[in-house]
Each structure stands twice: as structure tokens, then as C-alpha cells.
Length: 253
Image 1 (cartoon, rainbow, N blue to C red):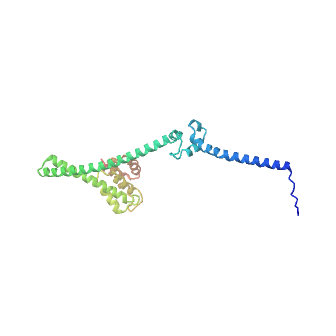
Image 2: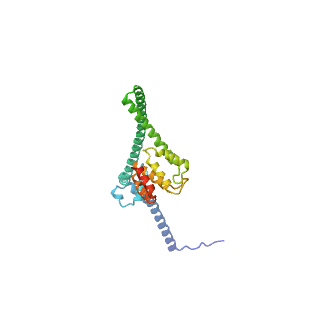
Image 3: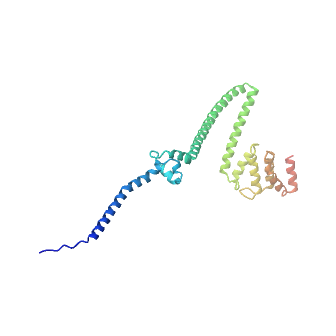
């Protein structure tokens, strides 16, 4: 049996072939040019000079210059301009801090060494003075007395500092008041007299108000050098009876 093949339109066939040829040419052109454009876009910034990348944003320049092994030549100048001053200041600050710390440590060590040397000299001199004092040498006796006075003063100051660290000065106990009175006997601690003056002039703590004793303690602090207690003295003086004022006046003549 004979089967008749469908007829093909020559014009339509020609158009179809032309369309296929055009598509092939277009695809080939794209394939040929796309890698070149991609490579060019990727290598442009790395191949360009410093003047040619001036239009790039700082963020993009920083990104391009991150890897120092592959960074273009212009990155050196860019890094120096962007980070040079801040890095230099940071390095200098770090070095200055190290030097200051080293100097502080050296000063502390020197102070320790000087203290040890001074103590050794003091002990050696004390031995010599003790020998001379035993022979009634006036100068040695005076130096020995001065050394004992310094040691006593040093201990007194240390004991006073320790006491202040443990006492509630606004609510003193009887025992604490008695301890402060012991400290107040020294001419070196007018602050003890000032505290007693406050304690006796206020209705706080374990001791009753005694304006005469408060004035006496403030006055002793004033005589020892604490001039700022004068307003407290004047305030209390007005509240003291006349006869007791006369007795206090005689006491401080």
C-alpha cells in the first residue's frame, strides 16, 4: 500500500533553518564573550592603578586589599593612608603603657631595696648608739632618744589607723571612748580630741552630753593645730553657763 508523504512548504523550511542558524550564532557569541567579560570584571580592580580605582568605594577597596598575598600594588598606599596613623598611635600607646608599668615595677622594687637598706642602717646605728649611750655619750643618748620617739610615733599612727577602721565614730561605746582618750593624750593626734568633742556634744552613742568636756576637747584639738574646730567651740561656748565658762577660761590661760 502506498502512503503519501506530507508536503513540505519550501518557504517555511527556509525560515525555520534561518531561525535555527541565528540562535546558534547568538548562543555561540554569548559563550565566547561571557567568560571574557567575567574575567575582565574580576581582574579589573587588581590590574588597575591607584588613580584608576579612586572611584571605588572605601568598603570595596578594603575588601580587595584584605589578602596581602594577592592584593594589587595600590593597596600598600591605601592601607598606609587608612590604617597607618591609627595603628601607629595604638602601637605607641601600647609601648608607653609597657614602659609605664615597667617603671612602676622598678620604682616599687627600688623602694623595697631602699627600705631594707635604711632599716639595716638604722639597726646598725642603733647598736652603735647603744654602746655609746652606755658610756654616757651625749650625742648618742640624744640619737637613741630620737629613734625611740620615732618608733613610738610610728606605732601610735599605725594603732590609730587600725582603730579608725574598726570603730563607728557616730555610735561610740564606752570602751572606744576610753581608747580615744588614750590617743588624745598625744600631741600628734588632735583628731582624737575632735572626735571626743563631737561625742560629748551630741546625744549619740553610750556617753551622755557634756558640753564642758566637749568644749575642752575641741579646744585641745584647736591648740594642737586643728583650726577648723573653732566654729564648733563658739557654738558650744554660747550654751555653757557663765561660771563654767570662767573655769574653762582659767584652764586654757
